[in-house]
Length: 285
Image (cartoon, rainbow, N blue to C red; front, side, top):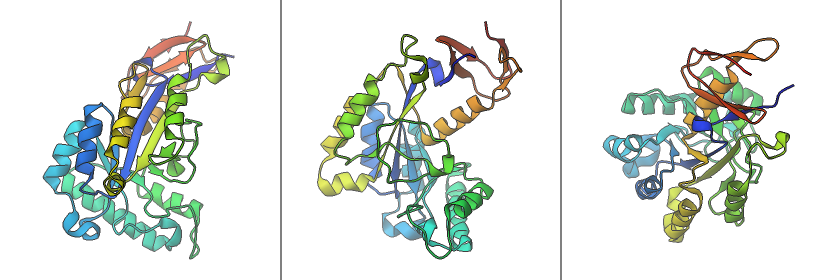
């Protein structure tokens, strides 16, 4: 049996993504900083009604986020935790937010970050299974949760309970970054240890303003950016790429593989790197 591992675009074994919430006006400065380092972020936005006079304009979002390769995602019309809502309330809050964002920016939006305490606690008959079901029915492809900061650097197995690596104020953050960057995924490494790795940072840009520690963001970017073996992507780009990899079709003996997706997919088989273009069939030698 061969060992097979997903590899990100250009054969990279590691990826970095950021996720920042609420659509604060401080997101503009945040985007200015991280964009200089080539890091990509998913900005999770509430409604204009929720943000009021502090809401970012359409032109600001297009110029500061979308034109730079970042993405926007749902964060609840009124920023209410799905775990505390009856299903009909949760459905309305998620759907209203998605509809507003899609209409404003003329694009399809499929991602989300749970607002408030999200799915970390439940009340009023809500359950994770119920929330996950209606998110899938609303075509929300992934949703970030919180509360599990760790240094496992794993890809999610449940995209509607996507656990980030750490909040930017985590006291162990720079240790996590160093550990992530030092991981060896080369063929010389023990086979079962060569799985792809993901570093996922989250937070709120207004926290940097409140603590007056924008230098912390700069240090984070300096530490983790511009690495040749890392793919810098949005949450949605990672979801789409991993989904494409998982959609590859294999022969019974595993030696022939077909790519039915629109993506070029990279993968490692026993230390040998393969590239499979859209619509291509490959014999693995």
